[in-house]
Length: 362
Image 1 (cartoon, helix red, strand yellow):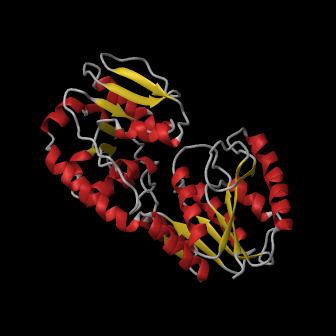
Image 2 (tube, rainbow, N blue to C red):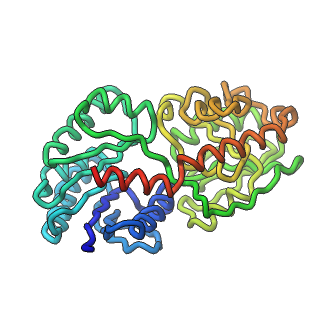
Image 3 (cartoon, rainbow, N blue to C red):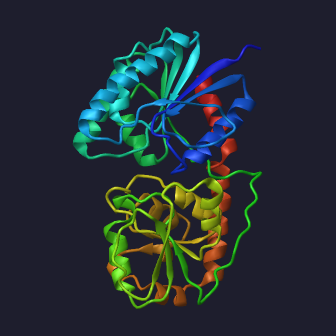
């Protein structure tokens, strides 16, 4: 049977950060399960080595405004070139995009004549004005295709997009960090050897004000904090900062994750109100003690699994030694394992592929 071309446009996929590894791996599996040939197009400075062939084509939008505008036209030309090579009946899947990239798509020659379906993964919740602009841009893009589907990763985003795009097929999708075939070596928490990890890339909304509050309050506590080299801070006291490269390869990243005692995710409450977190999923996968900010999506996930003791109300008053001394590790570990088992049913590579096949067939 002739295979259908499945075009993945992932313009922000540059390195080993965030969800990238898991999604590249799941698309490699997806290619084997059905009659699809994956055509993967990522950022031109992508450094990942993986089983899939990566076409490093798209221009980076992490630049100044003038360069972003120039890149709209550069990316449009790249998309037009891909479009010329595209045979009819292909499917285009877009993830990790900015509004600038969507404008490139709108003004390009891409349309329903070359692609039978558009699949757009919408992850973020912006301010009211930015959301309005984003929705309008998506509306214009959907007009270019006969069939389209929007994918979201939270119930909050599902409701928001469904309220605006009433006639569009919208589905809640898993974050594929779990697999039935994956083997994880779990390591127990060792008292008196406190090794804390702030995993992943440094961004202010992740490791900004709340982390500064935490370090100032815990200046007399003895621990090692592992964090990206891009984090800049004065050494407040007895603890030590151990910095790692901003973009670790998968092996080094998972080594850090498996060899830490405790993970802290002092995310900004507003920024992460409805945003998922790849490192949170990985922490659960490794059944790690993970402390998170209240009123965030990750906090709600812990609350649903009876793990409210890991939710921090105020990082300015969070004494980590005191909390760990009073924490029932046996009880918490059992609840984390139960949560991991539930996640395995939904947030798995197998389930992602099954749902993606359904979306493609609609």
